[in-house]
Length: 294
Ligand code: TA6
Image (cartoon, rainbow, N blue to C red; front, side):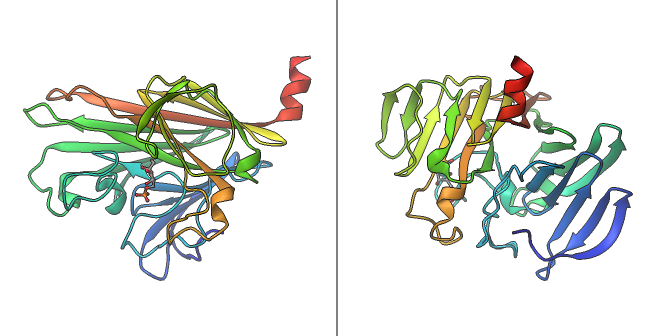
C-alpha cells in the first residue's frame, strides 16, 4: 500500500511533488509507460509499475515514513559501506538516512528521467568531505537505475554500494530465481557454500554471491522479472523468513525477495574517478515470451 500524500506542486506534466503528514517529500510520476513513487528521504524508489503489469517492488505496510529510520521496501541505497559499519555507525551506510536533492527531471518519449544527488553538505557530520553520489532513475517501459559514486577529493576513497531492491512476489516460496551464481557466502551459517540454485524460502536466507551472473531472472507463477546488473561484483539474496524485523508485518516476508546489486570489493576510487552501479528491470508475461519463442 502506498503512503497517503498531499499534492504540493507540479514538477512537469508527468511528475508531482508530494508530502506526507511527517513532512517527507516524494515525487509521483505517471507517464505513458509506467507509474512510480520516489522518496527524497533516502533517495529511494518506493514504487514502479509498468502500465498493464503488476507492481515490481514491495513496500512494507509497516514502513516508518517519518525520517527516523530507513524506509523498508523499494530500493534503498546502501552507501558508502554495506553491512555493519564501524562502531556507532549505521548499518548499510548513511545515504539511505539522508534527504537527497532533486537535481534534474526530464520528460522524453521513452519516459521520465530523474537525477537525485547527495553531497556532504546535505549530510550532518560529513561536511568538508569531497564526494558526490548521483542516482539516475529512468521510469519508462523498463526501469533503470544508475548509481554514480564520485571521488572529488585528492586522496583515494574506499566505497561499497548496493541497490538493496525488494522485489514483490505473490508467494516467495513459489518463486524460482535463476542467475545469481553458484558459489556464495552464507551470512547466517558464516561459511562459504556451493550449490546449484534452488528456491527454498522456508527459512531465512542471507547470501552473498561473489562471482555473480550479469542477468538474474525471477520466475513468478505467471510472469518473469529480468534484472540486468552492471558495475557489480556481488549479488546479495536476502529474505528474513518468519522472524521479521518490526517494520515488516508478521506474514510480510512471503511477499518479497531482496536481490541486491552490489559492489563490495572495489579497489579504492582514485581522486577524480567515478564508479557506476546499474540495474535494469523488465517484466514480461511468461505466456507471452513463450509465444514469441515459437
Ligand atoms: O543485505 C542483506 C542484509 O544485510 C541482511 O543481513 C539484513 O540485515 C538485511 O540486509 C536488512 O538490513 P536492514 O539494515 O535494512 O534491516
